[in-house]
Length: 86
Image 1 (cartoon, rainbow, N blue to C red):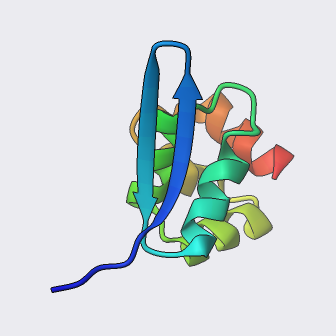
Image 2 (image 1 turned 180 degrees about the vertical axis):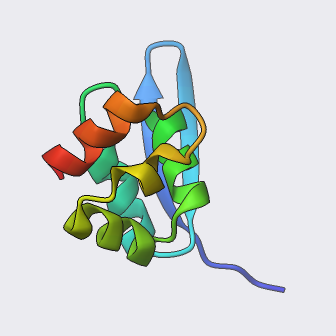
Image 3 (image 1 turned 60 degrees about the vertical axis):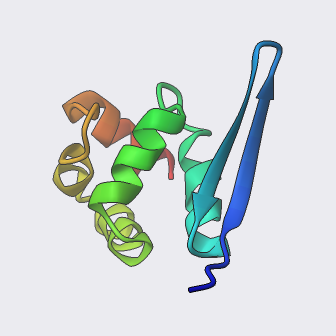
């Protein structure tokens, strides 16, 4: 079965990493999350693995940092920072 992915490419001196997403919206959230201090690709993927893009948008709009905190690698302070900055 054919699958179409939207790819985000990270090039560093010692590696090239490709991240695949089901939609441009999901990739956009991945990029946006990484603009928050303390959020790298691993944490951003963790957040998107726990919350759909719709649920993440709702959590941010409602200030529901506890929903974001459910992601692996996200503690209370980081969850609060994500909600506050986005």
